[in-house]
Amino acid sequence: MLIEIGIYLGLGVLMLAAMALMILRIGTLLGDCPRSGRAAKARAVTIATGYAMVGLGGVILIGAALPLLEMDFLGLLPALGLAAVCLGLGFSHAVATLRTVVRDALLADRPGRKAQTIAPEPETAAELPA
Image (cartoon, rainbow, N blue to C red; front, side, top):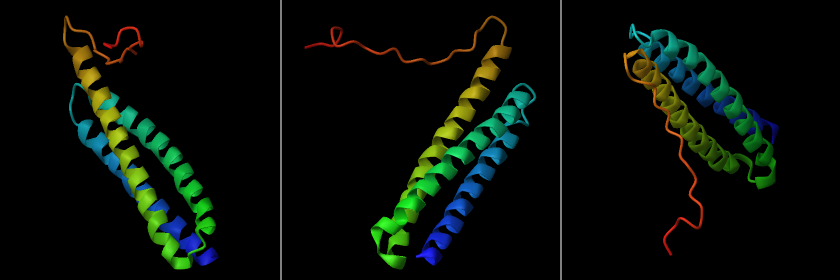
């Protein structure tokens, strides 16, 4: 079982590192813009660090549940699939957050316009139509 867990952790951390590096690369590309460059580069490092820590926790949690499957090498496939889906969802959220930061930085530079932040307001049950 140790071999399976080692293979899973190695591949899981490899997926995590690849996606964290992609976040940094996207931040570098967005940082080429003269108006939003500083904001994009600084937030890319912060977002990639947060993504890596949360993703590593998820990979470890799934790896800890691997012995419960008791499927030897066949248990690697569902575990790696679940880790890939979770890391992919986190990656898409991290990139969307980075795009929002860059958009806010661009809007803040325009004279006469404020940076808009989208904050959904919860609806109460009384306001919903019956």
